Image (cartoon, rainbow, N blue to C red; front, side):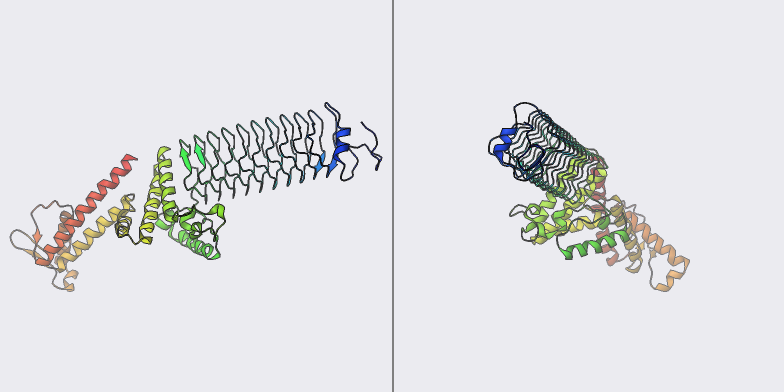
Length: 475
């Protein structure tokens, strides 16, 4: 079958011409394996499935061909190119497709069981319902590819690239997706159960309704990721798993929000790690009001109809809090608890619910039960303020009737005045702690009112301290 092509001096397979007919292809394709390295097919179309089983097609070109149902089982297809090829339902079992290229190819329902696709490229390819069981896809490229319902059962995808790919409802069961880049990809409803996703990058990906059951996500990156109703079940993470980048802002779909984020970043740098603004994790839903509207952001980035963005944020923070607790990451769990309570406070404020005032008070006193330092600062502040107020509202008196008060500011310049102030501060301490030794008592009606108020505040703050310490021990 090596007759010269009628328009060239080369054989049918290597004649560099366009639109070789499907009939010619069927005539020249003999049964059984052939060495057809470097073959050139451009625009060839046939509705009859063609078999290239065990053929050598290294460096071949299948540009713009229509070969639905073709069989490339165990074929050598290294460096073969399939630009804009129609290969629907094609089969590539055990094929060697190392460095093969499929730009803009139609590979719907194609199957690649046990195929070697190392360094293969599928830019903008249509791979809906394609199957890659046990395939080697190391360093494979799938940018902007359409992979809805694709199956990667037990596939090896080390360092593969799915940037901006459509992976809705894709299955990566027990797949090795270590160091895979899923940046900007849509993984809505995907299933990554039992997958090794360590060091994978999901930055700004859509993981809504995605299943991460028994998934290894150590060192993975989830910054700016959509995580509403994501299933984290026995998911493994560590302190290097990143859900919130303190050094950068989250994705914003509008210029104004981006400007606000840049301003916020400057404030973060000024305030430092210890401030609530710099330290509290925030998710995309809370940062970007557009997530509630399909008109402001792409549909793939919006929340389901009727879901409030603060309610979604609260759900995400609650789940991340539990996830970090399950993996013994108590410090991170505290951060997400604070974010959860803040999201709920914003939700209550938006709804006009008076319970928001309780949340605001809890934030001010103890960062929603997570900050011992802030609570102790309130202790010191109340004690010192009351202690400095007592001498000016009548002071305190001893059992023998001796009064310790300040009648004028000039007394503060004397040792006796300073001594009286310190004695009032001491009285404030025992009043705050409700010890009450009986050696001092309020000397006026106003000081008695102040004592009552400080005792009440002290009891509340002591109870809060016990609550906060109990939470920390429980974690």
